[in-house]
Image (cartoon, rainbow, N blue to C red; front, side, top):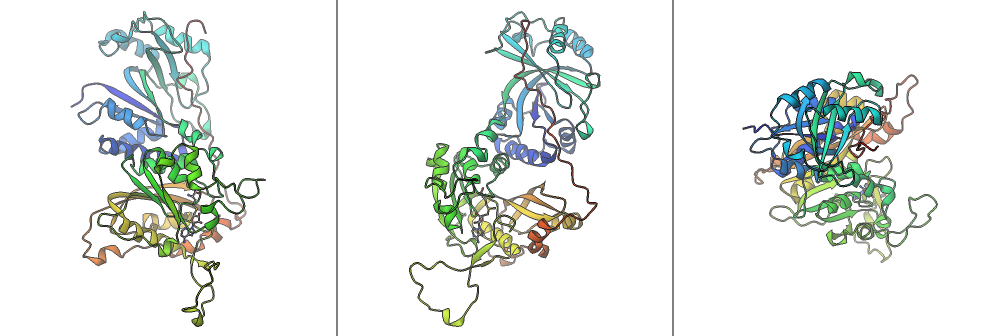
Length: 484
Ligand SMILES: C[S@@+](CC[C@H](N)C(=O)[O-])C[C@H]1O[C@@H](n2cnc3c(N)ncnc32)[C@H](O)[C@@H]1O
């Protein structure tokens, strides 16, 4: 039953990543017990258009749960309680005057600050802002002092403009709705800077971008009770963000040099890696070493993990190699000779590596995860696709396993021919006696041509997708007061 209280979550304006944003918000909503039924097609449509989600209070939708979502989400700018609205400022003022003020009268006497936030229009001048606040006075008789540094209440006008094409900003008169709101809490966008690749100790050619890694960890619904594994750990980007959310983490990789901080650094001009550029060093740099269980040099194709009754891990979060910047390799004999059997290897022998078929990488990952994830645990990984194939086959292209439900598939465009899809699966309870259930993992055969496809010269006349410039986002921190 609705009580009439309403809140708005302002999402980050990332047109190309709206599916990732949904995956994060829906996963966190589920995690905090708000459920997922709320996210109807209508809600999604509104969010795609305005990068906002409006919630109405019910037994399951509460402010406390929304605050918990914001305390983790890197997709949100902030949470606001909606106090009044109008399709024009005139209508807002009329509504403020005529509607009961039970939801705001307690704020009239508090020390306050004002803000205006909007998407899709250019910055607003200070005189325009001031005029808008002053005009509200007949309906909003604030008697408290203005306090910019530490207000007891921050009142924010959330203006809405129609979506703009080609990043052309809307004119002030095109505003089609305005909410008067109270700012409650911000989101966690700051973490993207904190964990930026440039702020890390260990970096490699394929170190995962911080925003993507933080999304992956949130979609995995992990917390301080979780145990997370990355079987293609590299420089440990996904362990870092998972440890940030409190999980204990463990990783493995076939690459001795990366794991032991040996050989050449990927940092320009650095020369050899420093001895602290290990996974431990990386986590310690962020004071997360107490979350680090360890790492091992393992070929995921022949991993040594022993099965346990309900799986070792709460989540497997990973970025498998797909042969573009990192080789897909596994241990094997390049030129197998019969007389090598039983040959005693010298102590300093390094095993041969052979090419790891891309389809096998994903089949092995699903089979491994089915054995070692707990029921309900999530498997999250990137999957490379050709755009032509994706258009033709859709979701049939993705690796499948009857022990997993596909939860989300979020596409990131790489170039005109290729994309990678962030796939999220959840392990479902299956009858383990029924062997047929666990053997139908399929990956489309074209996957092995991915490297060639990625580097193929672009055909003359191909139209490159335009890089979208982030839409102007004016922050609530741009408060105003009489003196300004
Ligand atoms: C795309 S990178 C992962 C990057 C990592 N997420 C990071 O942020 O640094 C893929 C990793 O898989 C590793 N790899 C390749 N073949 C492997 C195998 N057979 N078993 C385990 N790891 C493998 C590579 O050494 C590489 O570090």
